[in-house]
Amino acid sequence: MILQKCVINRKYIDCKDMYYRGDYQIVGDGVFVEKGNEVTTDTYMNIFDYSIYQKYTLVADVYFEITYRGNANIALVYEKEDGETKELKVSGRTAVPRDWTDGIIYFRFQALDDSVITGASFGTITEPRKVVNLSSIICTFKRERNLFELIDIIKKSDHKIHIYVIDNAKSIKGHNDEYVHIYPNTNCGGSGGFSKGMDKIIDNHNLNKSDYVILMDDDVLTDAEMFNRLVAFLSFIKREYRNKYIAGRMLNILKPWIQYTSCEKWNGGTIEHINHNMDLSDRKNLFCVNNSIGGEYSGWWLACYPYSVIQKHRPLPFFLHCDDVEFGLRLKDSPIILNGVHVWHKIPDDKGENYFNYYDMRNAMIVNSIYNPSDFRGQYEFFKSKIGPLHAARNYTGEYLAILGMNDYLRGKSSFLKTDSEKHHNRIMRISARKHSRYINMLLWRITAVKLRLKCNHISYDL
Image (cartoon, rainbow, N blue to C red; front, side):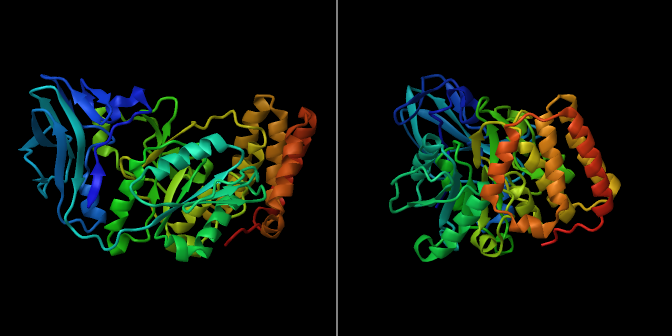
């Protein structure tokens, strides 16, 4: 079974060094290397990390195989972070030594004549416990162009993946087929959309036979190879790791070689992006690229969960923001990350829509009440840390919405769970369209601080 193909990227020309290094051209069926030139695959997408397969999977052997036209010297290279290297001449299918586990593995291609690499891969003759089935949930709202571009990418993978599209805008007409299932939905946000998608996968399990479920944003791009790598890795996963999930990296869609995050740490609301702003085209980063130490959860731009997880769990009805945080923290496990399992996405910034301030306050307070409980002083300092910058920036509408978020948090769990998400969001949107007074806000946040002092020890959102 093929574990990992060495691939090229035809879309992002500016990130060639994430795929191959050297002087080459992408041609119709592969990589053209002129006589006398050399290319290598010591890159984010095409290194093979034997150690992660040995730790998490039952793979007992690995081989390397390459197809090409022309004449070349080819070597398999094992390199450790301290610079030590070992080489193995490639002749046909070549076994990878089992002790090559403390570094990166790649190949070097020296063209003796004009040559074209038409394919290269790492594989195994180990039989998988089973070839797993993947399904995907994509929650969307009026982004049809992005959505169908993503669906086309998924369909180019080597596996049949059932795609469950939850259309919160009820704007998509038709487009259902054997593997694409579109469901109109009320606008209950990402949390409500993903929750409905989980329900549909369970309701149709006789059809999709899912072993793992991928949650994805509708406005991301990726490589079809990503889905192949997930299937291969999960098909060999050891029994003790079958309940672990895989976090998908977010890469900067404007700087495709820059990783925004590989996975996340909550830190009580001061989120730490693991391996933040890592340059994936830089060779020195290849030796730690699959290190997820400190990660607590995966964002839902891309996350892959065992079917057993979605049988047991649903996201809280947050509408947006923090649903992935709470869901991940509830699992009490760190994610696995793999090179090549990523999406390109617009990078979050601090200039989001005003209504975000409401959800960022209310939802973060709920998450902290469950997983990072604190006394009045801790909660008050968090409140001030959100309100202060908005007030200083004279964003009084955003400030008002954050104050409203704290007040709604203080209403308690019962009120939160009874909220009609769609109607409530429409109310928040109406509020965000108005101008709000600095002086009224100053009064309101003081009143809210008093309410927080009185109620902080009596609020519980325990599941």
